[in-house]
Each structure stands twice: as C-alpha cells, then as structure tokens.
Image (cartoon, rainbow, N blue to C red; front, side, top):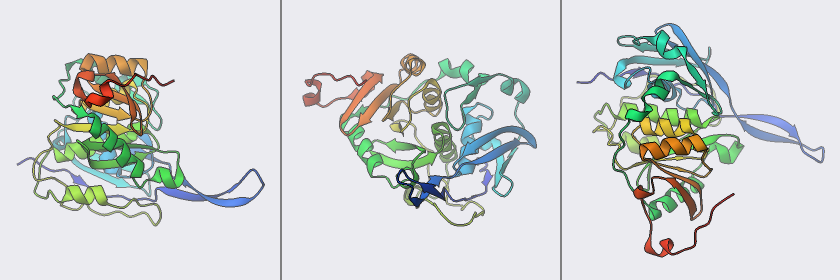
Length: 317
C-alpha cells in the first residue's frame, strides 16, 4: 500500500481589517487580503520563501515541490508541518531529493505574482509531457464561467487575489485563492497529488468543495483529518483548469505537468504561453466572460455548438 504523508492543517485568517480614508476625507473600515511569508525547509535545508494568503499551505508546499520537479509525487513526502507562529513549513522526505543542489541552481524569474520563479529542471522536461484526450464543450465553458461568477470568495469581500479552480466537465472539484495565481495552481497540484494516492473516503470530495472560507479568527493548527483521500486515484482525463489570471508560459507548463489538457482564463495569454500550449496540444481558452471567449490554441479539443460556429468571430483588445 502506498504510504500517505502526514500533513498538519494550519489555518490563519485570510483577510485583515484596516481603516482607510476615501476621496471625501471620510474614514471607513476595509477588509484586505492577508499576505504572509512561508519559508519552506526540506529535510532541514531552507529552500524558498513563498508569499501567500495562507489557504491550504500544506497543499501549496506539496504542489510547489512537485511542479518544480523536486519530488516526483506525494508518496515521496513523509510529512509537511506548517507553523504560522514562525512562518515556516518543515518538509521531511522519505529518501531525500536527488541532486537538489543542481536542480535548484538555475532559477528562471517569471512574470508571476506571489512567486514568479521556476527552477531550470522544469524548463528542460516540458517537451516530454503527453496530455490526456480531454475535450471541452461550449456549454461546459459557459457553465464553468458562471460557476466562478457565483463562487463565494475572498476576492468578493476583499479583492486583490487570484482564484483558480479544477473542474471535471462542469462540476467544480476545488476552488483556491491566493495573492498569486502560481500559488493557487500549486495548491491545486498538491491536492491532486494526494488524490493520486487513492484512499478510503470519497465523501471528502464533497467536504472539500463545500468548506466555508475562513476570513477571521485565530490561527488554528491540527492534524489533517483522515478523510482526505478519494476512494480511487484521480483520473486526469476530463479535468479542466480555470484561472482568473493570464495564461503565461509558467501557468501553461504547470497545468500540463498536472495532466490537465484544457485551461480557461478570464484574462488573456502571452506569446510564450501560446507557444508552449501549441507545442503541447493544450487547449487554452481566454477572455472567458459571460458567454464570450477566445480559443488561443488546441481548438481540436473544443466542441462548439452548431449555431455558434456560424456567428462572426470577435477578437478582444
């Protein structure tokens, strides 16, 4: 049986209330997103400091390590312990990280907010990724955009954060927010890695999806409930990733590494992001608002409704 890592379940308020002065000189209270440093130590070696909102930090750290290709999967991790009192995450691996010095020597600074860097190991292995045969229908795109519109979020209460979500068809599996879109996608990657181990409690899917967002209260820390994992490993075929942020090369590469072949954004796409998506055959849909969107790449994965195919094309600015 595959060993399941031990994770704490550290919690901290996601918003902070301050006093501001408006254009009329009036004082008023305002909630703003929390932002706190989380220094990651792997086998007692300091690796990186992530600036994060603090939602699901254990999943964030796990996803970061996997997306940076420092560990192959969740089974390589013995434990992740997060302590917000000292702002640190202590990661213990089962067998260490092979050639950790070489893997972390080259760093590519990206356009990311909240993180914005990739180790060279990621860039070198992107061409070997084979994506599943996922397709997305126009109705699913519309349903996903509408689900995000209705989603209760820190963005609605405080603004200034990015949101990412994982869907199977039009069904939302997980929604995560952070100060940077890269943190949010790494958190989803960590969750996916844990699901890949399998387990014995499929009802945890529903609990994860419906858990309320914590925006106030004291920092809490506890052992992760045993009902984390689904009964069966997560099948990546049919998964769709959504982000409120732009589709840069880093976002596309991370989605591809996670086995997600369709990504949707309410924002646009960069030139390098487009090049990587095209090479991988990844379907990248951007400027998705209401019922309008643009398919930047991988149009063979998009199933349009017959009536929509006859409509004149509209290109956003």
